[in-house]
Image 1 (cartoon, rainbow, N blue to C red):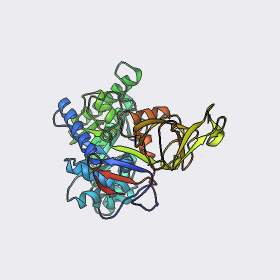
Image 2 (cartoon, rainbow, N blue to C red):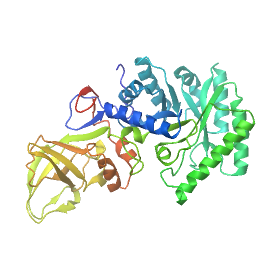
Image 3 (cartoon, rainbow, N blue to C red):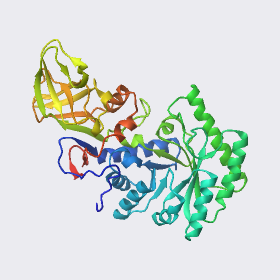
Length: 407
């Protein structure tokens, strides 16, 4: 694969480790194809933009991008220019061309590098567009761009929350489209509550956002400004609505997690978080497990220690969740007990016949396990995946256990 991109750690990549995040690239390709079918059943001709920011949600950008290229994906979205560098390098290595949209901020002083990467930069405001235009003209390049429209997320973008703001946004976008240092190809917004149904307050908020977006789009077209690409829906929006415009940005669905309990799409988990038992001992009655002794028992229990903790991305709040212990007698469920430590955690394996060296899986085999872990920690699937640290090597397989690469 050439140069390795490990964007979140300087820890050397080892081929062997007690803990591993096993990434099934065949499942990733399956999910992309399933999403494409679902999208085009709702609206034919809609492009699918694969969101691979945050190192492909913790799965590993180079390998995931390469797998998606093999499945026919030709449009990716990332957060920053460093991630765009990684995706472009993978595309060049695979001898494939693809569009790369940077959703976040890039300093205008990087205009020449944006042009070299042929990356599409989001325009976060009129002032930013003007600064990027000046920087581009100063170095004699033209930067591709999509307009970010703030219809209610209140994060980035040209403001379009009221009739007055919509008129101002249309005027500012029209002026930005005329900048000679920019090639404005599209426009997008981001729903703040896309998973909610239309009969809820949050769902109606998404409907309002879509209406604001359409008002800006229609007003621009009345001025003769017809942008080639419009996209408003993320994974949540894809499940909720058919109003896709020209493209959808799909992230969490690609990795087999659901923004809704039933997304109506046949998805496979892509990442399995696994480790091994490093120690087994008997917990005496009245003795506590781990810091603060929040777990103890009235009778002797068998406790197994696992060499993985919150520094690896196993949140302290996962205490009480179930794991699968793969013993010689078969696979059995066990509970995480006591506080999860920085580098270790404990599970109750009483009566399971568990031994040192047995494999333990946290999530990735059961399609619902990741969501259960996230809900237990009062968070979301996205965070549970992205927080798996670089200390846990990614092992890539292509189908059931067929290893193809290690990080």
